[in-house]
Each structure stands twice: as structure tokens, then as C-alpha cells.
Amino acid sequence: MTRVALTLGPLFFHWPAEKLRNFYFRIADEAPVDRVHVGEVVCGKRMPFSDPVWPEIIERLERGGKQVVLSTLAAPATVRERKAIAELCADERLVEINDITALPARSGKPFVTGPFLNVYNETTARFLARHGAASICPPVELSLETVGTIASACLEIEFELFAFGRLPLALSGRCYHARLHGLHKDSCQFTCEQDPDGLAVDTLDDQSFLAINGVQTLSAEVHAALFEPATLIRHGIRRLRLSPHDCDMVEVARTYRSVLDETQDPQSARFVLSCLELPGRLVDGYARGEAGSRPAVTA
Image (cartoon, rainbow, N blue to C red; front, top):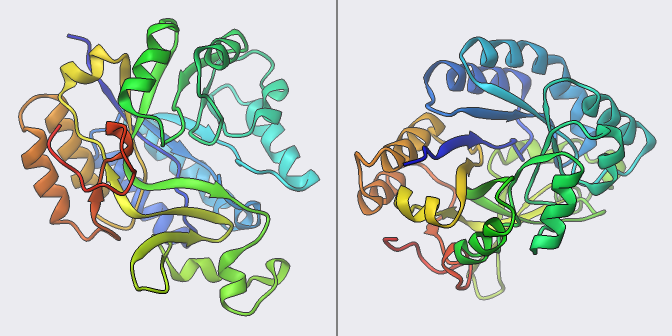
């Protein structure tokens, strides 16, 4: 049976440079992932803090046998940000495109797409394939069944399922963290750094609702799609994407790898994940074609 690979997606949150370095060095040395995304996706204002450490991180990851993917901004808003995307797209490494305006800059060279691109049908997937898409991570609200339908019509593309983490739901021109602290977006003082997994937002009835991360809205819960490898293969899934959080991501990767290697069943793996210091309860409704906030169950 075809082996399902593991990907560590791009970090959505604003972490200090030293924390970034330590996190990715450990991933390089210990995590059973095949591919690692690096780069800022959410807010271009954070790039001056992380850009200086990425070369060292990339070198360590590649020395550890990981394939590195350069992730690009999902909502570029300035000339500087668009220029940064064009420079990344010129790199010989694989690049993740999260905004369709980056497509011309890649000039037909292979790329992967992140869940921010609206790939909801076979026609869009084929369009991206013609322009060089080698791997597609569809939007997070699509069910395994729906992704399988798209994948069955695009056999030349490798499909990747968003399998772990707070779900990236939306991006805004407004910075929620800045507003929360009574600041303007242009003088945000990078208050999002105070919340390494984002900040949970409850309703007026004190019910868990969403999470904010600067200009980004995420789910409050932690999505954990755990399926037997045969089920994934049957639906055309060749990769699972794990989204970095401020927990033991090496253990998360090991847990998913054990399910994919059939040395642990999904129910046991879910229990292992539930014992970690996660920012929310485990859910998997979207993957099963239900409400995204439905509690995770055995697949």
C-alpha cells in the first residue's frame, strides 16, 4: 500500500526568534515528518523578526533529511509583501502559494497550495495543475469524501489533508489583537506574541467560539482527523498536514505516524493527543462532513 506522508505546515503564530529556532531544530532532529513548511503566512509585519533565522533553520531541517517548503503570505497588502512573495517564488525549493496572485511569479515551476486557496472542485484543481501545482491542501471545511471526489478526477496531483491544529478560517484587513489592546493595526506593538496558540474568544454566554491571531480567525477547538491509512488512500490522500502549536509537536507527529504505520489505532492515538497541553478540545466534524465543532470520534 502507498505510504501516506506527513507534513508540518507553516506556523501561523508570532513566536520569538529563539523559540522558532529551538522548535524547528527539534523538529529536524526528532520529528518523523517528511516535509516542513517555513515562512510567514499570516502577517507581513512579523517578517522582520523571523526572516533572519529562517536560513539557519532551513539548513538544519535539510541536514535532518526534511524537505523544506517556502510558504508565502496568504493576504499580501503592500508592495514590500508582494516583492517578498516574488523573491520566494524565484527560489529553486518547493514553494507554497497561499494567494493566487503569486502564480505568475512562480512561472510554471512546481508549487504546493495551502488551505487558503479556494480549491472546491476538480476544475480549479486541474487549472492549478496546469500551472505547476504538485500538491494541493484543500480548504479545511471540505470533508474527506469531498476531497476524495476531487482527487479521483486529478490523479496527477498529490492531495494533502489538513489533519491537526486550530483550523484557519479567515483573514481580515483588521488586526483583532491590536483592537483588543486599544491599538491601531499600524502600531500593534505585536501583541499577538502574547498568545503563542492564538487567543480564544467566547460568546456572551461563555461558550467556546473562535480564536484570534492578529488578522487571522481560527477555530477555538483543535481539529484532529485520524483515519486508517487504507481509508486515506481510498480517498486519494497522500499526505497529512500538521499545523504547529505550542505543544509537543514531536509527540503529535509520532502519534500520527504510528496510525499511518498501523502500529496504533485512531482511538488510542486520539487519547494520546488529548493528554497533551492543547489550546482546545479535539474535534473532527469537518473531515466527516459535519459541523466542524463536533467532538472527534473514532474513524
